[in-house]
Length: 99
Image 1 (cartoon, rainbow, N blue to C red):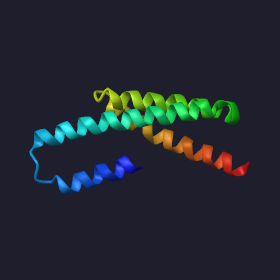
Image 2: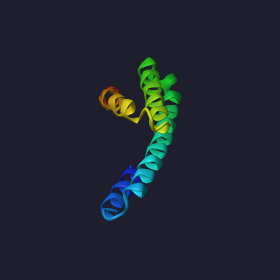
Image 3: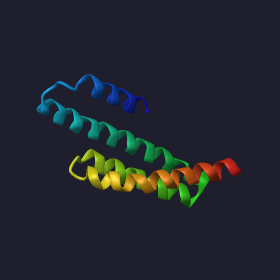
Image 4: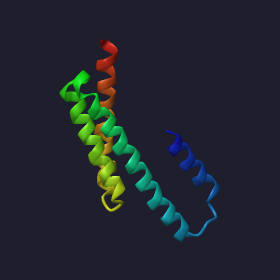
C-alpha cells in the first residue's frame, strides 16, 4: 500500500517530465509491484496449513500475477488476473471473519 501511495505521489509531481523517464518509471513500478505481489503470494501459501486449499489457490494466483508484473511484457495479463484475485481475497477474508 505504501508503494502504491508513493507511486501515485510521484505521478502527480512528474507531470512535466519527458516521456522517456515516465516509461522507465513505469517499468520500475511494474518490477517492484511484481516483487511485492510474489512476496504476498508466498505469505499466503505459508498459511495453507491453517486455511486449507483456498489459501493455496490464492497464493499461487498471487505468485502468477507477481511474475507477470515482474516480466513487464505480461503486465496486462497480470492486470486481467488481478480482478478475480481481489474478489477471491475478499472471500477469504469473509471466510476468516466467520471463524
